[in-house]
Image 1 (cartoon, one colour):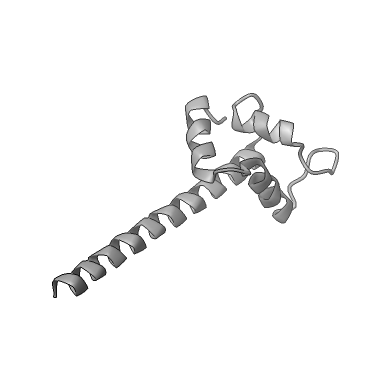
Image 2: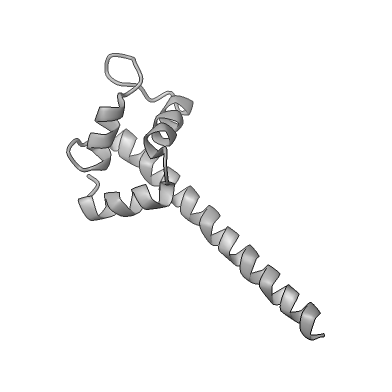
Length: 92
């Protein structure tokens, strides 16, 4: 189960539209509710906020979080490398 403190960080990292991102990931993986339909935004929000427990949904959320964190770290490294390269050009 996702803890409330974790949920805040997940929301911050995934950014706006995080529920849509989660729903899209579940759809890609063909993970549906027991009725065979996509999960509602309310249910996904409940899982994210720790009000509901659903291992498949939680796994998809963590997968998205890990991917986004990796993307942000790579972006940060690229920017830092670009700055260092620019410093070498201007000091050279």
